[in-house]
Image 1: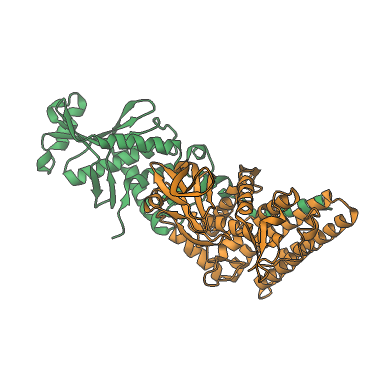
Image 2 (image 1 turned 135 degrees about the vertical axis):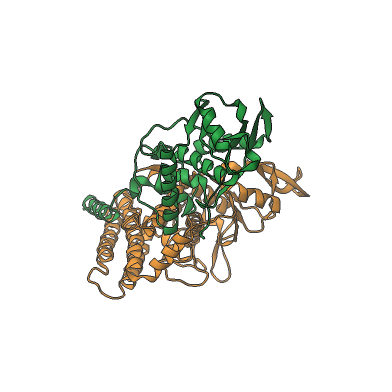
Length: 235
Length: 359
């Protein structure tokens, strides 16, 4: 059995495969303002102990694991809500889910909440990274607690908004495919080429990744041009 | 990557470094009104750790374990060097590094074609930059004769450059040795012309490179600056996960930092030689600041060493544009970027390692 991989790597993978390999294969890491703010946000989310308000039990920093996906991670927040608190169309789903095989949780709905520094990402290519990370947490919780987790939430620090994320079939498929790709990528030990696009300026690894260099530039051609220029100038 | 921050140089014997919260406290012997030591240590300086890149201690300098731990945690390396600038020990925090990168480095070092390509870049960078130093001096030369001597040496370096570019293109065996020969020849030509770069203070003459020990003041200065450069190159190599001992142009020899020596080739003329020349030609260092031992070895006194380190630190803070990346950085960051580019080449991102070809 290969090493279990961190759920956070999944988020890196969906955002940028090269970033994922730089961090998790090459062991590189760099902080910038955005990552530092993210760390503070997560520390705050984890720091407060478990609490109960309005009948909802809020657990922070729970260790999570999925044998099936071979993933490990830590949740920001998991809310355990008595079933009677659910109303509307979701109530039926949650009730059905909670009547699964996990005896300790009968009567409770399980809701993972992931805290993010920025805002909801809308880009079609990498906008799914937060939802995939949340879904992986849901899959871990389902396996560990023997319940179904039909829904999760993303809390965005910049907009101070919670987004409801249905853990539906499409997201589950997307997440399982990403998990398979993650295991394959990190097992290969390879680092995919850089893409050099709109993601790069905000990425803390930009100075280590050098996307402007790694995206298909020839250094040999540059050396020839440069030496020829220097020769001409000297003549 | 870390921004290039200040290096704290501690050059006074008997100094002790201690942790003071998030700062390093520099403690040295206190002096009374008459200038006599009081026998008590006093805090002379406090520097926040987060403003520092590294701490370099020369000679007999101590540090508390608490400070070493705090520095390691803050990503600040603490180096202990001899008074001549040779590295004795360095305390760094745990860096996981990248075993895949090191394996790629070892494979390349075992592969003649890959070794040749990397060694070629180092030689091209060095010879081209030496040539630029000579050409620039020829433009500013006070007399036509001197200018012609410098241009003549520059022309011979141009021939060496062509030799380095051609080496191995005919598939001949031992191309890296050919390249080493070209590099040696270029170094002899360059140092034969180096005396002409000095502004003419008769106290500072240069009759060829001598080392271990340096036998004149110019060589003492060069050796010290090369040691500073090597120190930075070691840090640069290690901080991006490379093994600083396994070089390409420089063959493996136990205890020799082959890769760091490869990395500094292109920087010697640019950073070290120019700093030495400026210090001498602007009379910032004086002949009296150097002492000659019974064996003819020349060493700097503490005040001169301080002057050199101040100039070195200022040189590293200059803003320059990285020729290949086109990015504005401090000169001190260049060696880190070059190490990073070498790592990217070894990991397959770049077809060859681009040397720093200065104008």
